[in-house]
Image (cartoon, rainbow, N blue to C red; front, side, top):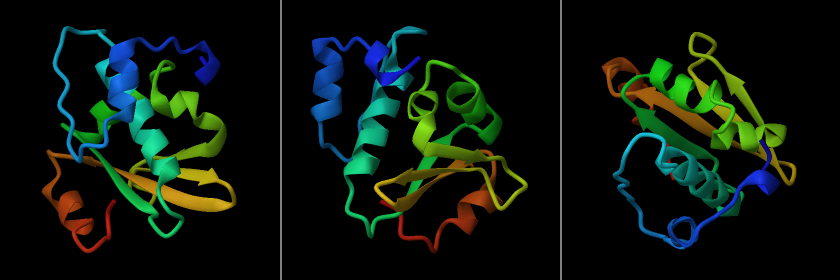
Length: 127
């Protein structure tokens, strides 16, 4: 799947345009919540100034995040895969490196189930 294959409805466009710091989505399974939030998240990261390089994607656990985003062909990660590289946990922490316009940005994957991992990102300047 590529970005050209994505068909956006009005509610998707509204979500992508929304600049709220926190957005909650609710609905039935396979209603495209994670998908469209992921696209909006990545577009925001790409629009951030070059000096903002650290971001976090949090979820129940890193394995759940990997299933939802890394291993899922219809996810924001796989749509933007030409500019993304995933590094699994155990190799300096689970993270997605985004390379665009000659700049590097990092999305750290953190599970709520891992207190130590949350503590390891406390000193970072996260956007």
